[in-house]
Length: 281
Image (cartoon, rainbow, N blue to C red):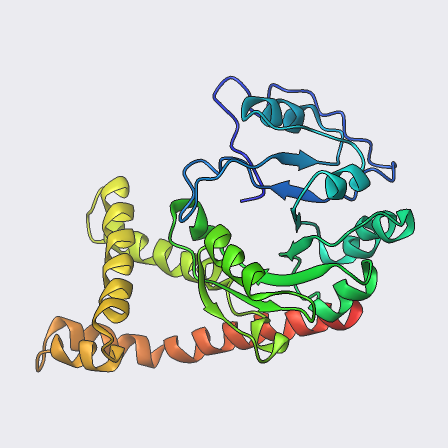
């Protein structure tokens, strides 16, 4: 949401990069609200603002009728909603100018910085700022996000509603900011499994392109059945597992390889890493 895809004539490979790595301008805030290329829930027109002086992003901003600026303070002054889209370690630097400038900052700040709590962000911003922390995932690009968010002390019900519209939120976690840690990057952990499904199909004779399409549709269909029927996945599994059948054989092999334990361990490891980052941010 905070990035704008380049057109075919404006690829990253052909546009010179003017980014100054040793410049304090590198930390950036993004207001990634453009027309959002037909976003999931709303189609209001917003502006796209980016602080890093990168020619590529200037062209992207121009393409959608937005404005590119090279300072964080104007981003906040000209925006109603600011998306904090930087690495966790950069958040304090990116927000420092805003608090020091003494500008009126009673804006909504949506943070997608991993592991940085709403409490931490609120300390880095002027007291009137409203903060909501969002953990989106990349399927948002195809309008199938499983995003969650947690609101800060000053955020309002109206802020929560607009956040849901912007990011396509699946769940509003009002009670505990810790619960958001590691919760929504599951798509990254599923992709190796999807790739393995396709590799298995290729091993058994399927063309590669067909194997990937079938693997993707299989995962999508299985997930949609659980979501739309509200049926326990174990029940759905039992319904199609015939005695001495191929499904039973495949499930037995997965159990022998510790498939479920590996998935649980991946979730646990990612969550613990998010908590570690949160302590140092």
